[in-house]
Amino acid sequence: VDELMRWATDVELSGRYADPALDRALRLAVADVFLVRNDFAPALKVLDELLPQLQSALPRERLKAQVGRARALYRLGKLPEAEAAIAAGAAETLSEHGFLAAQLKIYEGEIARTLGQTERARTAAIEAVRRVETARDASPQLKGMVLSSAGTGVMQLGELELAQQFSQQAIAIWEQGKVRRTAFENNTHVSFANILFLRGEVLTASAAFVAIDRDAPVDESTPARAARKTGQAKALALLGRAEQALSMAESARQAMCALGETSLDCVSMTVSAADTAQ
View: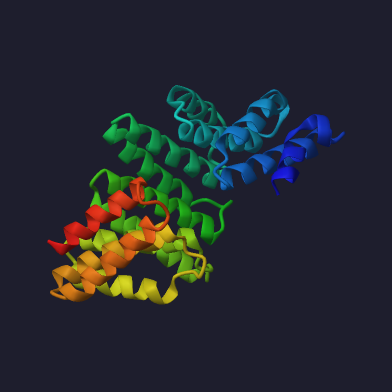
């Protein structure tokens, strides 16, 4: 796969299609693959090289490129450049491209939170939800992803009631659309259970964790599973099931520390296990 991506990225190797529209579509698709893989530097390289060709492209293509650039630049820690990409994307016609416009707002909210701009971050999350709810260019899976991301954003701002609302909406859309449970959807269910716990609905949170156990994807990563089990252990501890809670927290700690005794994840899980023990 890596060799194929290198070939597709290097125009000296892969060449360009004679049809400019087809060539732009290929470059945007290649950038998407890099973004999905969290390979942000090569994604940004592809998109930056594509920018001159986008002057005569469709508004949707320009918007898609700026959405991708905003995400890549933010993840690479280049906040001023990410802000500029957000502004460039917002200059396009957004009304016909609800999903992309919603994505742009999600990334704006992430940047605002990083900069400590709380009200702007909250407004961006709410606007992302408003746009995706009326979007005609998004599947149930994509709509749910935006709602879930908005929920995570406002949860990090301490807006637990709003976070619960957005997470519930995401889960409902996926269930109605019969969307297959993937790692992203599973993490949203975990976030929802954690929100219930933080709001003091411990019994409901515990039941939610049990349901997640039953439906968790077989390819769930070790960090995701360990984080989930840590939250579940804390709920069990508050319900008076101390022995089960301690066993679960220790199991999560061991799983993470097996990946590296000196890693931050191992240290974090050790602290969480100690917190549960108290």
